[in-house]
Length: 546
Image (cartoon, rainbow, N blue to C red; front, side, top):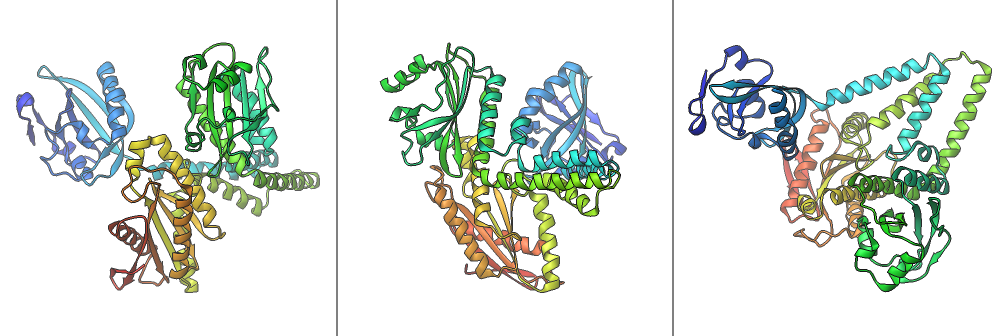
């Protein structure tokens, strides 16, 4: 096979061996300006292109945005520098628009005075990686049976990871008491950032953000301690509560160089404060307080990683505030479990862990791999497993199952307008809000993918599912998350598809998903910010009135 390019590369003619053309892995060559000069049949088939469609196109045409940036800033510069790259990961975009993860090895060669870059591409699947991690974790749990002390340590570590995120320090994760968490967080942040004062400020809930007090504080030597001082005027926190409630972090490098009200400047001079980094602490949708990092003696240029760290810790503190009561109950449960394990050790130090304890360890392990890192609810893997389990169970019982699929209206516009960080915050708030609305133990709220969420409602008929959908719409509307680029509302809204079936042998859980997906499509066609349903009959899906 010969491939000949026009224009600049008209003099380049390459012959591809038939074995390479049909090899199990993909092969691609591109010139230094990004023009694709050769693609084998394997890669064309994987990406869904015909033989001549990619020839002469730019590499950017088959790269998603993230991969395009990685290609331009890392992959190609490294290839030019070293003449080769090995085991680089990024995705290619198929003709149908799906992103396919690839493992790439590449070499650079001179062809008739022009450099050509040859790439071997191997398709990988994220599921294989996840399954590998699960197998490793299960083997670790089984090995723990051999030594009771090692198993207890592993259980304690897994338990901690299941209830606390890893962005905060080990000391914070070991404590479930709110005051202790604040004290340790203030100290650890100050030492890590080498700041002169770190305080946690709590608004008085009846003051409309007019006043409050520092409930925890850590200061460096020579810096004034201001804990327990009450801020009783608008300068204490009412400067811009809306921006704080929207999750915006205030970054001030030099108080003297920004425009402030006279009372606000006098307040910072009193303490004193010269540079300021403030992150909001939210309790659900309400502004609870502020995490404040101060440089007292001189201006300070806050680094991007410092701002990001403070944002992450503020998110963890917000979760701690919301779940303080739950944490106390878990602490009591953990203490009781440790006492039971101590008694067991006294009876027989050589006694292996019971099957019940092994099942608990396995359950905790699966909890870790079943949680979505961004929203802290169930992920797609957990959703698929639970849906199939409930489908089989309700098939035996001949009881109904309902599925809700929803996504955020005009979410791409939201990201473009407010930025991806605000988009992540929005998804987190929506997930936590829906989790509170869907409260039955057997129900499951999961992140289905991107801005799309799925809700499994076992033993629920269409009327019950519609009632849940209405509660979800109302709860999300009540968040009042601004969305000025939406065509249907000035706040964030969702479109939802509702599906309901009694499982039979001729159907599968995939049919339930197809009905919900069709219903979601119908809700969008009808104008968004609403729910819709479709029905299933025989081999077809047809619309019904919601």
